[in-house]
Image (cartoon, rainbow, N blue to C red):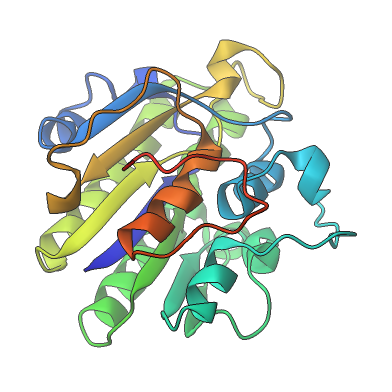
Length: 255
């Protein structure tokens, strides 16, 4: 069994609730459209909380500038690496390079959305992930798509341009699902939402994210009423039969 987490930066649940590509996948998935992210609802702190299953006040990164942890908490890739699993990361926003510690990744791929444009960078990282994962044996993969957040800031959340970036992201998600073997377990989520041309507040539009489980391991899954971005790391660890780190605050949603 292998697992991939696909994160679409800035993707609001109401942007995909009626989107044709997203609906086709959600109809075959276990889905929450009310999952909560962490405060502040800012990209790097949210990602750190996804990987380390604690609030930003604990991991110490509260802006988009990474802060080394004073009291280090092992992240998801460190826990998986310690258990002998291989991990890979594909991303187009360079600040994410600090999500994992040295020697926890078997493979990393980065292409700059700022240099090449985020629509092209979305396509490039997806194609790179598909190419690599169909050739090499990787247990856990993280795929980050940054186009939606860029259009939210540039043109406004729920704007026509924002919805175009949603469609591009889901076209790439479809490409991943079509290419990977059936034994892959796929988790699709976001780091935060957004409103107007910003995010980072405690508004529901910023704090609410989708959490979508696609794969055979989730067929009998019933999600609790309240779910959090911090639940993703313990759930991924459970898919591999690995105990979560004792410092993690999130819950295993498979339990």
